[in-house]
Amino acid sequence: MDIGTVGGLVLAVVAIGAAIVMGGGNPASLIDVPSILVVFGGTTGALIAAYPLGSILKIHTVVLKAIFGAAPDPAQTIKDLVKFAEIARREGILSLENHVEDMKDPFIVRGIKMAVDGTDPELIRTILDTELEALMDRHAGGKAILDAAGRMAPAFGMIGTLMGLIFMLQNMDDPSAIGPGMAVALITTMYGAIIANVITGPIAEKLGARDSEEVLVKTVIIAGVMSIQSGDNPRVVESKLLTYLPPAQRAAIEQAA
Image (cartoon, rainbow, N blue to C red):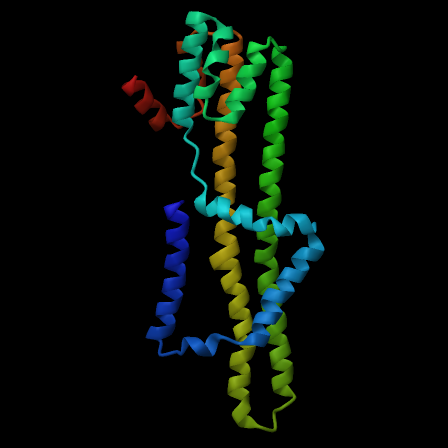
């Protein structure tokens, strides 16, 4: 579980709830069924119209990935690849076939197996690059749905507010109903803002960060597999792969080595 994502969402909700209570408001007064129907129902319907139904039905897996997905460790990946380079240098690249069970990342397994089978280096790179691009497209698709929800929810909140104002103006003969009517009209705007800024927006940004982290690791793996396949010295492999890390992290690994 990603403590930062969960902690941030909980903190945002608690801060809003505490502000309501400290301001003397009644949380129950912020629950309005028609407003919920307009914002949640309207946003869901618009998303279904805009994206394939299969993608919408799987959006919960995207959200769970942002909350429970563990961030990949490029430093550990580099260490693993250097270890495999040492084995290949010492025992030959064919010996890596006996160490497939020690490879934790299926992407490494796929690349090493092709290298062991003697696949053409350009073909190996093409296949791995294509898989990486497909991964990026899948991630971009999930993030796009959440970004769209973040744009649509405030818009439907404004629609609900306009509807409430219209109904209120049609009943101006009762001054006592103006205040409550205005309050209900504004609730829909609040719902849309909460969805966009507390739920879909942060999760979409976290997915973007997860995508960058995973792409970095996959890029390191591709460079490592190609270096192993070409028979580079393990120190050369390590030097090549460390260039993908920030200077501070790179220096720490070199010092530890």
